[in-house]
Length: 391
Image (cartoon, rainbow, N blue to C red):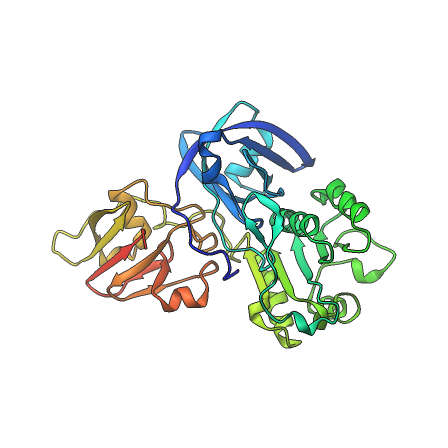
């Protein structure tokens, strides 16, 4: 998570055509969308951001968020989709999606971006001078490290390619965990980066189900292996910024271990692809399920502002539904994607009222302090609450 992306843009969906599907591994594909010129400015992005995709699959609307995996290019959006067990969208994308299909694509969002970033979203050659604490490295060059697993590589590809191409001295080191060599997404592109920047890019593949010459790079990344990697390979004292992307358990392990060895939390960016819950996809009460107000009046009054218009919906206290779920009954265009507290698409500011928020893997601490919530995870605790999606 980053604090340097500036003002968040309003979320909007537009129909974009799939123009290419490229097989990356047996169970993952890269999907390319062409953005028409009149929408190109709306789809500028900072490396590390994501888009939400919305499609009708089997007669029902399905939304999923995927990180953009390419260096910024005007008129093009590329994402990588890895098939997951039981994943409706990911299975469809891997097995049935074809070029020529039109899918609703949300404009890029997200804060998983580097402090070393482009000054103009589609101008990767324009790199801003790093604003803080470069004196701690005698060379003055920025050293970035990423730890990724599986499809967690997708935003890392965009960040690494952009930073390396746009600077002369920045270095990037990647620890990439997979089951086996056949599961490595973007294997060819990672090899090309190593050939193009032999002194500035390094990748360490850790394979859990294959033996490697160095035992440090075989097996799962657990606490012991991570400490060995930090002590013998990555050298945290020389790292300016960290990027962690993958499943909940790995990201949390890395965050905790980095904190234990003295890494400042403000230097660690993280993004989750799962929240560690035993079930996948939106949970009951998060997708506009049928709920009726209590005829006896034992309801919460939820008021929300969206696109300059205000709406009010009553939510029975016995249902314990989220603000998002209630708002969707009134306005089906209320923004959301993952409904799991990960992507941040449903962010809104509480203007009045009290609440409880179950999970938060998307908002920065300063946003929470200012009253922002993830409405897919937030329930009112007072008789009335007002939230502003436009804030």
